[in-house]
Image 1: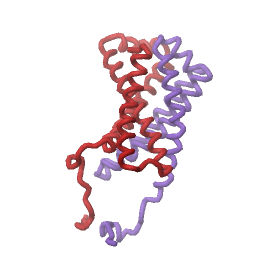
Image 2 (image 1 turned 120 degrees about the horizontal axis):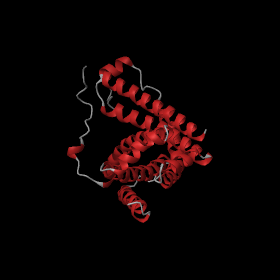
Image 3 (image 1 turned 135 degrees about the horizontal axis):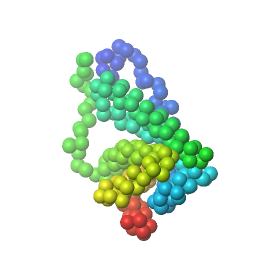
Image 4 (image 1 turned 60 degrees about the vertical axis):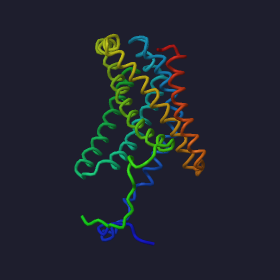
Length: 125
Length: 131
């Protein structure tokens, strides 16, 4: 059987980056959580978000609303950071651009998570 | 960097006839990226809500004006995007168990999932009385 590796890869002899399995499992575990959480969260959100400030704030601040929002958004932000990482790795060729976008992806996900955490806790008081 | 000329090359999109499994695979990525954008908007909405009624009024004014139509269209698109990614995501989990790789069944399930996402979206927006 012929070896399909590039000469450079053969010389380096590093094999894979060795973190693929952990990434794969994390993506699946968050997916399983989201199958349950996301429909519940979005249906509740759609029912409560459209009727003005008071109702929306009261729902997000309620025990069920706050916990459901935090669970769903935490799983979603984690899952989408992992997912977009793969998209960037697949399509962005230039190493500097790739690294910059991977870092930006992490910052966006982390930043949004803190913003959501603060907002929901502020409304729940 | 030296390249190995015997490495196999994969023909890119333009060389393939479009088929259902290919469409659902590409749609899974596309809807994943769309969901990312949707999650950014939900997060921004939560921050506006937490900032208080005066700041939240900006969102309500946008929604009442001509931009409101665009927001509604975006929400309909987001509903489809989440529905498709969820249904096809369940299929990915089933694949992980080693089930569902037959050609005919895969094509059928691709079509059913795409149709299912449209039906869920239509159901929520029409039957739900939101549109």
